[in-house]
Image (cartoon, rainbow, N blue to C red; front, side, top):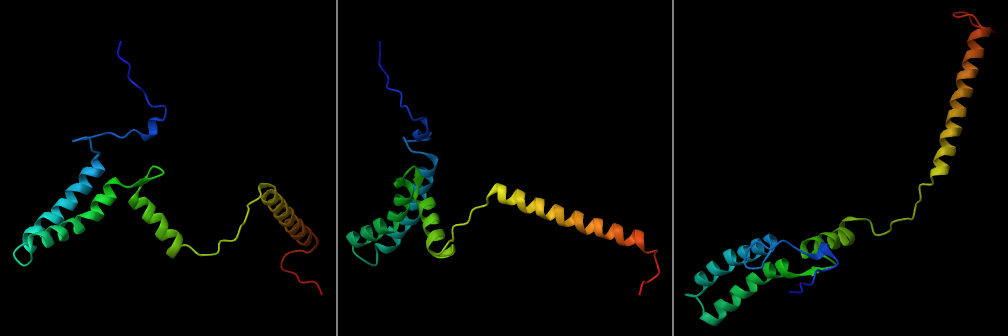
Length: 136
């Protein structure tokens, strides 16, 4: 009987579309090829073949990096997004604040008591004085 190992963590398994690559990797490699190959043929008449090939490889490298690099299960674009958020967009100092449920209930209770006191006070003042007449 054949033995097939089954991984215990199924979250790391990705659906392969073609050539044992995921859809994201195919799109990244295709984008790199769409940029690099025409660049090679446009640069070849103006410089040596090795220099044009080096230019092509350097222009395709970021796309290959986006396709293949993964850290802690996250692709490079998510890592870069989080890095930009933490370094440039979010404030540097973030004070620690808690939202204690019991303190919120206590604040609400105090507000309810205050509202009842105001309503109770208005009811007494309207019962003692007739409307439209001012007391001196």
